[in-house]
Structures are given as structure tokens and as C-alpha cells.
Image (tube, rainbow, N blue to C red):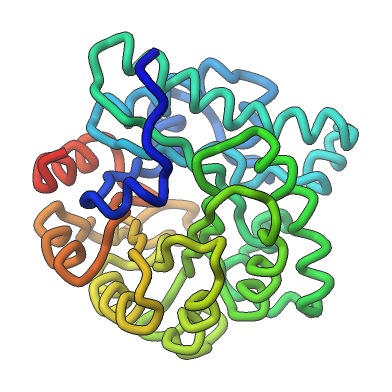
Length: 306
């Protein structure tokens, strides 16, 4: 194993870092059925080697940061499967360990680092598995959401990832809760909204949403993910202007999910040609989300000279 990498926050000052793409589509391409309310988190217990291989594919494609398979891993969701709190905390920690193992294998195969791991913390709605993660407004107070998020974030932080990815956040109430919940955990975080145009999924102006993180010392990057590629550019510019922080951006492929047909439809509009504009506007973490695979990540890495 190579020497310890520089701190994640410091790495953002040296140039853009390439993020991975969609973990679920990589696992599905390998033949795994993820039509389950735990989604990719189910494989933390059932097939951890598959998770390692999926992360490894992205490291080998040029990603320098992979995001763990803990997006939909929650104490409540796992409890519905008969998993107790101690075992659930261990599975959350395992998500970080599996990504670290993928980094070790990548380095053994000659991939040059540094290689980083970001622990995914999805929104409350992801636990519900009913689509509300794209609407927000769950009927809970900020304090209630903070109490819900804190134990999971603490379990992930205990596994010592390089960063916490507070991702696919649909509204400002949940953002406020997450910003409170990460205080004192000792791990830097990025805050990433899921957006539609210039607003959060819940309809709040993005300027207001980004401003919440401007003075949060724990948050080292702010931006968007799981959105249309055409919404990413304006959001990057706004996040950089409002917060003065590095920006994180990883949109979807541009295809749309048809819930009735249970299939993706429409053309893919994410291309590596977009990343130059994003980095010029302040993006320092650049990758893809749903339906963006290793081939596209490799193109992004090539454009960024990674």
C-alpha cells in the first residue's frame, strides 16, 4: 500500500478529482438484481465481493474517489430484515472497508493514487423506498430529521472514510438537519442536492439551499447530483458564487426512469464534453450518478488529465 494520501480537503485545492459513476448500474451489469428496498445495500451482507469489484471497475476507469454502497443502508431499513443495531452499524462500517479493499487492489494493479473513499448517506426518503427522496417534505421537523441521520452518520464516520457524501438531498429542511448532524464527527463532508432546474426537488431556490452550507466548517464542497446534465452547469456556477467552496457535481446520464414501464427511456445526454465548463465554474469533484458507467468515467478522467 502506498503512503497515506493527503487530506481530502487539501486534495480539492490541487485540481479536480474524478468521482465514480452509478454503483447500482455497475452491479446490475454484473447480473445482480437490485429490485429491492435495500437496493445496492443488500449486497453488503449477501455479496460483499461484488461491491468490491464494482468499486474497482471505477478506480481502474480513472476515478480517484468512490462512493460507498451505504446510500440506502439505514438502521430502520435493515431492522425490517431482522438486522439488529449492532450488526447494522457493522454493515455500514463494512461499506467503507469494501471501498478501501477496492483501492488496495487497484493500487496492486498499478493504478496510481491517491485513492479516496466517500461514505454515502442518502436522504430519509431513500429509507422509505417510495420515491419521496425526490420530493422531500416528509412531514418531519428539522430536529426529527437530525435525530434520524445522526446515528448512521456516526457509524459511517467511525469507519474513517475520507469524506461523508450527504447526497441526493431534496430540500432545505433535510439539508439543515444534515448540517447539524455532521457536527463534531471529525470527518469532512460534501452536501449535494438533487435538483430540477434552479430549484431543489422540493421547490426551494437553489441560492437559498446552497447558502445554508456557506458557513458550515464541516462541509468542504457543495453541489448537485442525481439530476439532469443540463441542470448541472448553472448549479455549479451558483454553488461556487454563493458559498465560495469547491463544488461537487455528478449528474445522471440524462435518461429518464419510467416508473410505470419500470424502464429507462430517452437519450443519454451526459458527455465528457461538459466537464470543462463545470471545472471552469468551480467544480472540484466531478463524476456521474445513475446510468453513468466506467466507460464515461474514463472519458471524464481523460478530459481532466487524471
